[in-house]
Image (cartoon, rainbow, N blue to C red; front, top):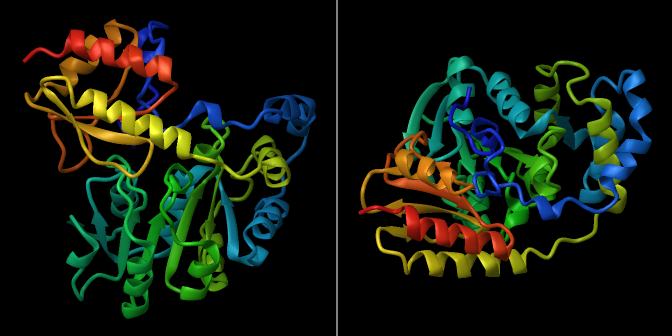
Length: 334
C-alpha cells in the first residue's frame, strides 16, 4: 500500500489553494463528461458487465486492435496487481526510482525482486521486467524503439510497461498494436490520468490475447463500476486528440524559473512533471512550509533510492505556477 502519495490535500483541512502534488492535469478532463455521467446516474441501479466487455470493444476500436487484446481495469493499479498475480513467482527486475506499487504487487505474489537503475542491467535470471514509461517520478521517457528491440532479443522475458503518462509527453511510446505483435509486452494504460478523473478509477491493459486471457483468469468480476464503464465508453466516442505541447512548454518554463532559485534544482524531464533536488535534505519540512502558504507538492522521499533531497512537482496553470515560485522563494531555507 502506497503511503505519502500525492493529492493529499485532505490532510491540510482545506488550506491548499494550488496543488502540484498530483500528476493529473485537471484541465484535461473533456467538457461534457461530468454532465453526461450526471444524466446516467441511474446506472448505479444495476450491475455492470462482469468484465466490462463492451468497454473493451470500444477501446479496441479506438486503438485498432481486437477486443480480446484489451482488459479494462479498476485504474492502472488493479492492472499492476493482476500482472503480478498472473506471473506469480517470477524473477522480477524493477527500473527505479519508480511507483512503489510494482514492488508491493511483486512481494504479495512471491516474486524474486531485483531493483535496477536501467533496462540494460537485467541479467539472465530475470523473467519479468517492470518499467514505468514515461517514468514516475522522474518524468523521463525511454526510447520506444530500443524497448521493442530489447523485447525481441529477450523473447523469454515478459515486459510489463506502465504507460499511464503516455499522454503527457511529446515523445513516442509503444503502441497497443506493437505490444500485441511483440507477444511479450504488457502495456498498462490509465484513463484516470489521461482524462483527469482519478476518483472513477479506470485503466486497461493491452497485450497479446493469450496474455489477456491469463490476466482475466485472475480478475475479480465487476471490478470496473458502471459509471466508470460509461465514462470510458463516452470518452472513446467523444474525446479528441490531445495537444500536450502547451503544458510541456509551461513545464519547461517553470523548471527554468526554479533553477534560478538558490537551494533547488529542477531535474530534466520529458513530461509535465519532474523531480526537484534540494541542496539540503529537507523535503519533509519544505513540503509543510509550502503547505502553510497554500501550496502542495509531493515529498519524493518514499520512492526507493530517493531521500529527503527530492520533491516531485507537477506543472499546473500559469498563475498557479507563479504562486509556487513565490512560495518556494519564501520557504527555502539554506
